[in-house]
Length: 339
Image (cartoon, rainbow, N blue to C red; front, top):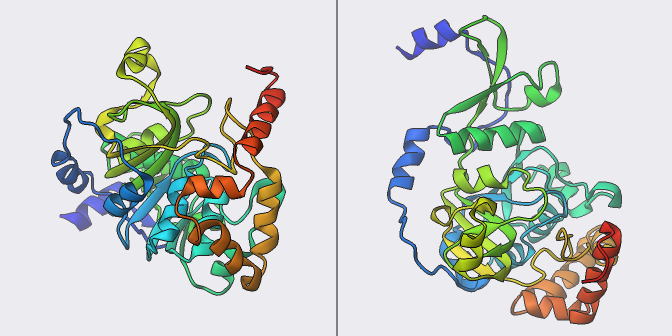
């Protein structure tokens, strides 16, 4: 039956990459059916959220884009708790990937954009994972990973697309070529991606997990709906009345969310649109020290392993005074003026 079906669709293997997550929507639905839809208070500490919802071997998706709106506090806690053998979706992953590579907590990755911190340069610690073959790799494009999330959010096993043909990216992906049943044209079948856990930072959320995002949402709406568990960090927890006052702004609904953690400046040293600018000096410091394990290890001990939480990390980086400087810089960059 399966062989006949494959022959009828003209299925052709194009990539040699390993498919890390099962794209079967019915298996995913079995999990989602058991997930509570109750309107319950989900507020907890970052430490508790990581302990409860991130397990060794899990496949993780991270929200945001580049160094914008990244859930830094949770990533630090993953290192503190010594999580291991995590898989990662490398969708526009910059400083987030750098953190996890430095901590040695990942062993496989779906790659679209990793290692580089955009115009800032390359993370040597991240690059060493690949050069020393210490990580399994499957290649995609940013669009391909976004559409894999879309397929999962829609509850379908794959998304057809017309991308990546004729590239080495396709060769090292886990995609397949199929024939369109209407036109006979070749399409690339991008398998649905159901992460075990998604970690997303937002501007505001209520205690139940209804969340609002200011500015670009990238793929986070689909990521939240595709993931089996969602840890939400937020700049501030607001009342349910604020959410109900403008329900069209609810980007992520409560029933997707498992944990709500209030973390002021939670994207630092990344940028939080309309809140604070990225700390370019601290990012440069990261890039300088991660070129060598001898300088990276004491840096991690000082800023992550030796701190009890994200607030203590912020204090080491200049505290409220530095955050206010970054807030003023964000307003100036956006032309918003002080508020």
